[in-house]
Image (cartoon, rainbow, N blue to C red; front, side):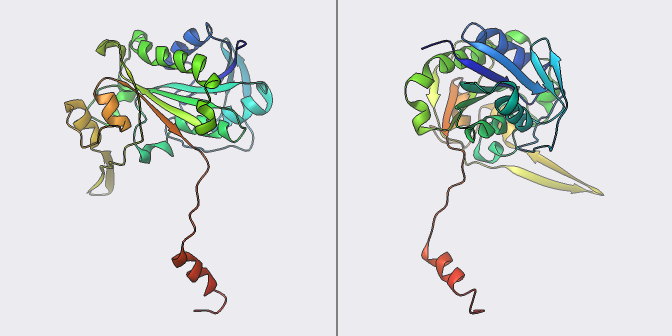
Length: 263
């Protein structure tokens, strides 16, 4: 296989250590073009802008916009001949079905699939007890080593194996390198949901209780799920599809048929 053209983006911003870790690794694999947000755009989902400002950066291009903006700008204009999109490495895990739509990292990968370009979103689990605390953690750049190793492995090998004939994108979550060399598990996004809302006077705190349980290693997620794999110290790879699926069934058909009759 010829050296691939790689579009690298993220949601933590172009100056983030996680993006730099993947850049340094992937430049040994292919021709890397960075198109990333100028500033942190975490948890913006697939928010899209009408137009964005772009400026040149030492690594490529900094976009005044969202991760989805970066993917569209990259594939549509700045790097149209891209072979594969990599989004990450995010500081903090993106695990579970309910997280996929809100994650800017994952959304950048999803956006690529509508261009028919394979994509990989990459995140690193940081063992903290609060769902926002990882944003304040000073992460040693060396901690991204396992995430970078897994990304390099998949970018080099997955496109030539038919993986992307059965999956639109791969959602990868890796443990911190300090946990030691990891194995790789093919997983499904966990369905466990433990968001809570607590009202105190004029404010409501929204909190994901799963982070405490992850820090303690006591989680309700089943074997084979993405969260279970990462807590066990392995790299989780979930093969996913991007378009929404539809399922016709008799109840909805009957409801639609009755609309014209005012039933």
